[in-house]
Length: 132
Image 1 (spheres, helix red, strand yellow):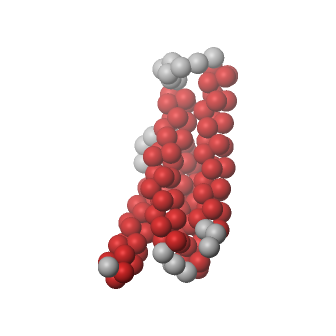
Image 2: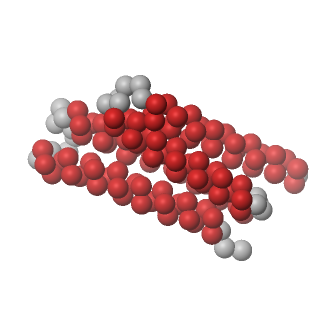
């Protein structure tokens, strides 16, 4: 059975990763900073936004993949995937606009990311505990 739902959200995540990486490259090029951050706060922030997505994406996508392979209904997978993408967009916008400080988008982006991660982990634990 093809894992089409996870593949869809992994693809959207990949596009977001490239978009955020492009922001980093754009700043590097305009400020002529090859390695490191050169003390440029905008670069530090753009790099952190990108890195945060990279840090969270693998576990969420692995948990989605396991849930889909375990037979979780596509409806629920789409719910998790949609919240995941919205959370990551909120986080990226909030961290950028808040310049590293508190921002509504950053707060809700983190909270929703954790909610998706914990929920998928629990769904998988329940499924596999019942299968043992």
